[in-house]
Image 1 (cartoon, rainbow, N blue to C red):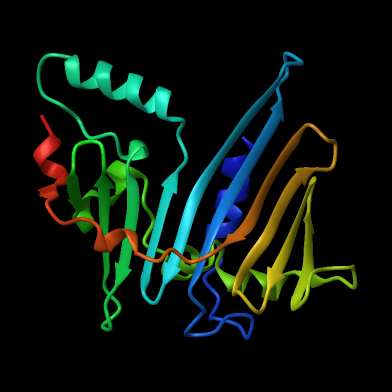
Image 2: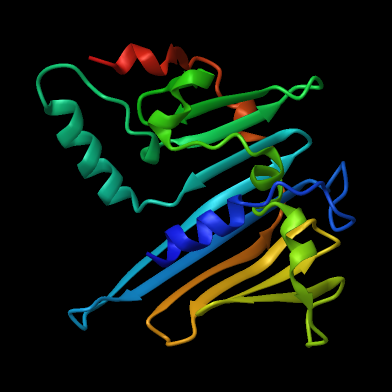
Length: 228
């Protein structure tokens, strides 16, 4: 899958932080759109399209997939009506990652449907497919990746620049904003045209009230409370 190939490349850099990123990036709210397409050997093209809300304030990053209310309501109605032990579906909750001054990460999920705040200990990160890569979490990609890419002299928005990398049958392009300290666009595609991926960031106004300040009354649980 294109998404897997891209994810492995985006996560694979262990280089030191380059000049492309600041230690204190600006606070930012955004809506992120994803489009993943692959044509299989059966000739059928399969597409995945989704969006999420994203917020970065200081050492806090909040992200939440946008799920249509009727679909969320139907899912929870079925899930909650099923007898027996309930498992936690992290995809239906907002992800909240915070970093302490000592560099320690804390991962929590806010489930607004059940008013629950679920803490995930380090040893259970794999249960929710979480990788504790703070640069990538904070900037959407690890900015060190740009060091291995070619800067392009193409038209771009203010204080932004296109970068490109070609490797084998794949081409990846990133529109990096030095002002906002994140990619405005990430594109990756096979040169034969059978696989493609695009992530696009649309900036939004910062909310008047931060979501992690609206969790009063939530029940705090540990992810392991949902294990059998």
